[in-house]
Length: 277
Image 1 (cartoon, rainbow, N blue to C red):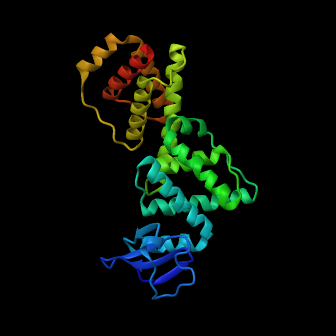
Image 2 (cartoon, rainbow, N blue to C red):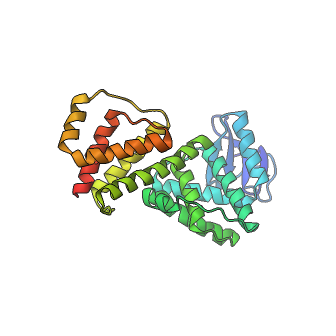
C-alpha cells in the first residue's frame, strides 16, 4: 500500500488494487513515513473507500479537526460494535460518530454534561447497542481519562441503533423510542399490572411496536383493508381492543399520527398475548 497523503500518524490516503482512493487507519500507520513509501497491510485496522470527492473531503476534514485519539477511539468503537452486534457500519457513520464524540469530549472538558431523558428506555429496548456503548465509555476513560455518565452511553447507543447517514434518521430513532416508552406505559396502566420483561411475548410486542412506530414516522404505513379480521379481534379480545383505542388516541392527540385498522389488528393480538402471559 503506497502512501499518497498523510493525514496524521494513524491515517493515510492510498489506493486499493482497483485504483480506488481509500483512507486507511491503523495505530502508528504513518509514523516516520513519507509520501510514496509503502505501509504493511497488516498494520491497517480500517479502510474507507472514498466513493465521491465530497465524502473524501468530509472524512479528511473530520480527521483533521479532531484529535487523533478521538478518531482512533471512534474506529475502535465501530470495530467493537461490528464484532459484538454483527452490524456493518458505513464510512458515513464513522464521520457522524467521530463528530459526535469530538463535541461530547469537548463539552465534558468544559464541565458541560447533557442529560439523556431516554437512557432508561435505550438500555431496555436496545441492550446490545447499550452494552457496546458502555464499553466505549471505558475505552474513552482509558485513553483520555474522561469519565462519562450513562447518559452518554445512551447517546452512543442511539447512534449505533440508527446506523444511518443523516441526522433526520437519528431524530426519528429518538422519537420512536419515546413513543414506544409511552405506548408500553399506556398498556401497563390500562391493565394495572407490570410487564414480565423476561417473557418472550413481551419482547415480541416491543419489537412489533418498534417496527410499527418507525414505519409510521417514515410514512411507510399501509391499510390492507382487513375489515373482517379487524372485527374478529375486536370481538374476541375486547380489553386489548379498548387498550389499543387509547394508544390510537394518544398517537393522534400528541403525535398527530393516524393509526390504520390493519396496524390495530396486530397491536391488539400482541397486547392480548402479553397480558395473558
